Amino acid sequence: MNKLLFGTAGIPICTSPRNTTNGIKQVRGLGLDSMELEFVRSVNLSTALAEEVRKTATKENVKLTCHGQYFVNLNSMDAAKRRASVERILSACRICHIAGVWSVCYHFAYYHHQDKSLVLLNVKKEIEKILLTLREEGIQLWLRPETGGRVTQFGDLNELISLSESFEEILPCIDFAHHHSRTNGKYNTHEEFLSILSTIERRLGRHALNNMHIHTEGIAYNKKGERHHLNLQESDFNFLDLVQTWKDFNIKGVVTCESPNIEKDALLLQKAYKNLFR
Image: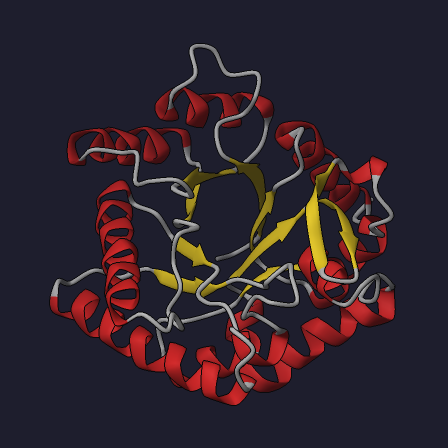
């Protein structure tokens, strides 16, 4: 990736009629550069439609990412549920490959009151199976563990980086608002945002900062972590200092806005970032 792109988590709200190809065109019309396919409930593209999505994204020069299904838990106590989770991830990656998606993110697991080191090991075992199948099928894309917004969710910074250190096809999906919520209000200053990017650079190298998949939104939280997403200016999230750190580190990749008003806040972030270069 040669620059930082900004886009929406799903089809922009102002799109009419609402479908994926029109959403891609609307993203370009808004002056944004990326769109995230929302497979969170199900893989909602057929093979034929995925091919159309690829063509449209290529024509409009819009980078595609994907948020995979919520119904995944690679640390489930139930072996059948772990197998089903693996199959869900594979099914999403297959369609994403056809659609030309660059990066697919997931909330991979829950802790279930287990030791974090054991959970990390269990998740690694399942991801190894997934990546073996993807390699055999010739599917190349980034598979991304995402920051967990709740304290019960797998996905602190060390866990994301540890997975990325273990597999060439893995890099983190950093949701800065989720770091904020899972720590009950921490990770909301320029210095704390810098510490996240510094740790990524130190452990994963410049390559990771040149291929960032970022989620940003306002967020409501309590001591258990994330409650729900908010619009940026209706939250306590210090997004302007966050954007400053993106310039400080000259990161590249995709910033996906997950606020309820997806395109409005995506444009807000894009404008704040561009203003730093004036």
